[in-house]
Length: 157
Image 1: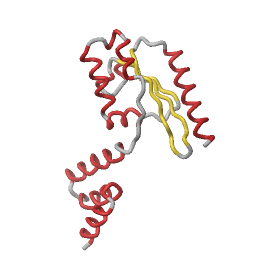
Image 2: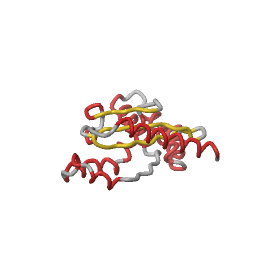
Image 3: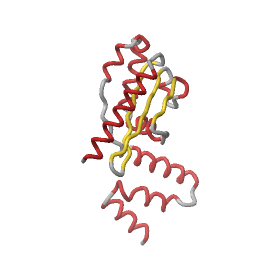
């Protein structure tokens, strides 16, 4: 009877109840527990929302003039899970990852600057991705200023 109740709950609200039901069904079965953890993580990461801007600027940098490199970066931006992972690791207000410091294989030849800002009870994040030879001081000032302005805007609402 408990399994039937779980199935009915999932059918009524799949996104909210599926992780709970899978957790119940997978208890004690190691490979199913691993599957449950993967599915739960994917559902959580897929809730993130993104606004992308300036993607065509990638072609302005010689490092990305090779079609394959530009394609890899552009495909990265279409991968919601990879984007969510990019923002999920750092809780710091400002962070720089250069080249091999990036976990994402498609960003190993790039620099990634991220900044966080408050949106009421939520945290927003902004990223600047570019060549490793970028002017870091100027880029960090710019991304910090944008994050501060976004935070001020959201606090006014």
